[in-house]
Length: 149
Ligand code: DQA
Image (cartoon, rainbow, N blue to C red):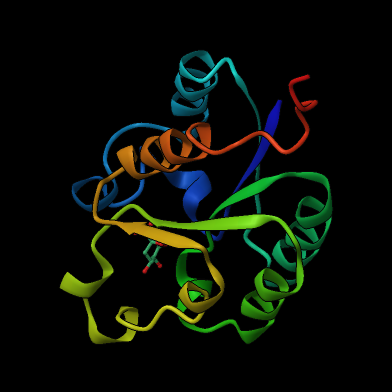
């Protein structure tokens, strides 16, 4: 089974309560249950941290344990060379997600230091971006499946 670790960065624990005009009124915990129900063929785990170094450690661990990482590093996407280095270092295929369209927002959000090391990125789809990332992952060959004889 393809394994996916979803990692959310700072302030995304406040989804549903935080700037609902930008990020929507749904908590990620409730959305995650929908994702897990809608993708029974994927093994989906989830973690969130507000701390840069913890995100680096999560990427290092998931990067060797999971086939894919779906990563929204939130504000650290615009500032963190350490997180960009972690994404580049690990073998897991990483899909970057931003809920909002960062290119329609303040200038400081227009640079995503992680995008270069991600296989693909989604931005501006709302929470739907995570679902689209999983849709793509589901379409990929399962490297753990035994070959047909
Ligand atoms: C975000 C965009 C970032 O600029 C912001 O700091 C976030 C969330 C998004 O999902 O749209 O916290 O990554």
